[in-house]
Amino acid sequence: MFNKKYYYLIHIQYLGFRFHGWAKQPQVKTVHQLIDKTFKFVLGDIQFKTLGTSRTDALVSANHSAFELFISQPIQNLDVFLSMVNINLPADIRAIHIEPVDEQFNIINTAKTKTYEYIFGYGEKPHPFSASIMCVIQDHLDVELMKQGAQLFLGTHNFGTFCTKPSANTQFTRTILTSEIENNTKYTASFFPEESFIYRVSAKGFMRNQVRLMMGQLILLGKHEITLEDLKIMLIERTPEPLTYIAPASGLILEKIDFEM
Image (cartoon, rainbow, N blue to C red; front, side, top):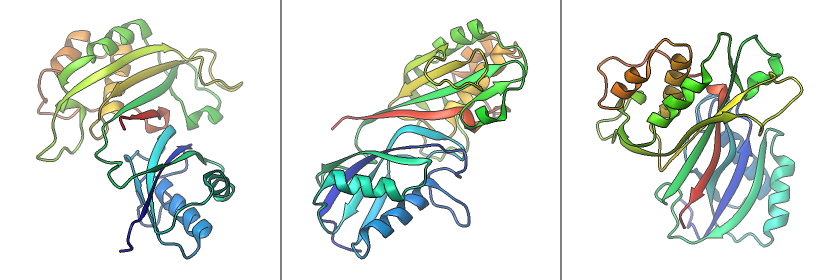
């Protein structure tokens, strides 16, 4: 391993629809894989390593994510370097900012707040182009009831039911800082449904598939397949049977990460 002398935090965006998530995996395209491939080309023989702040599932996008760059030589001109990186990255990944950090900074352990947004609609099947960032349920959804359900997630609860494959050390008690549904005026396109919505949720950290399982139950609530009381019970303790519905991944966007540096 090379001597890591210089450290940088790089902020990025990506459309996840053609990727199998962030983490490198054999024989499939991932965001981390293409970032490292690009940096190897741009940096040539300069030794480097990259470390992501968090993993995302296949098809999940990011409006703002980040990774740490460890490099054996200093970057002389950050703007020129960022431009070179973007020229060589594929069109569905963009580096938006680079900043130097010191060796005390650790992207995994540094306190941060993550905000996710889930874009959804309901009714008639929409134009296929919308599939990359939106989930459309081909059924009626009671969105006003879903808004009430979203409010139940606020605060500190046992979210053990909203987690897949937890480890023995997984802490199920989590505090949700934001949980709300509003009309989508942020993401627009001529081929989008006439009306769509955003579910926004933020916390210091989320467990595996937590947001998609939360959204899945809100969808079932909107279809009147579960009740508000059912949702309240799920937040008391981990249920013995796993949840049977998880919201599709393509509607999920990592909206932003706020680092407490």
